[in-house]
Image (tube, rainbow, N blue to C red; front, side, top):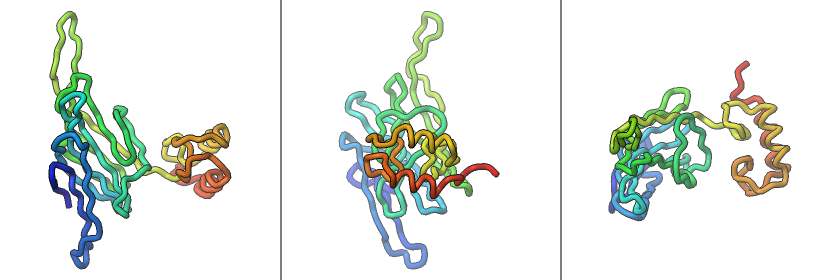
Amino acid sequence: MLGQVAGDFATYKHSVSTGAQQWKRAWGSGQHTDIPTSIAVLASGHVYVAGSAYTNSTRNFDAVILKYDTNGDLSTSWAGNGQTPDDDTVGVRRWNGNANGNDRFNAIAASAAGHVYATGLVVFETQAGNESIQGRGFILTAKFVPVERGDLDQNGCVDDRDLALLLENFGAESDRYDVDRYGVIDEADLAELLQNFGKGCQP
């Protein structure tokens, strides 16, 4: 269930069988009223929430997507195709067009395969000859695909390329290649990658 409390996104999970509340989460930019517009729930129990969030630096809204895991915690696992988001934090992705207009997501949906699609509007400033066209809206569509643990290059398959990336960065501190999210790429990350080797790959 999705709503708004004190100007923040409010997301609630209730039991299907009893209706009892299992968790509730509030999220806000801390800068102004934020506007949730749509919610999608995967079969895995992960929850995506879309809308817009205010940014003081531009005095406008950014399009934003939150991802919660099954416990209601903001998720650290993302994969995306399409336009690169701005100002990412754990579990949150934001998009801001270069005209710094009011950007937003209008809808978000999930497929049976676990893919997530969101669509909305971003405002760009473009050049046409010597004329500057400001404040034109462009459709923004984002696609997120399920991420296998160990799929370091995020191509949907845990394979030799992922193993090579891990070994090249072994011993380093890296959020990107740290499979178990403990801060250092070590034997535990290698073991988890090998355990998931081949997952997501086409036969």
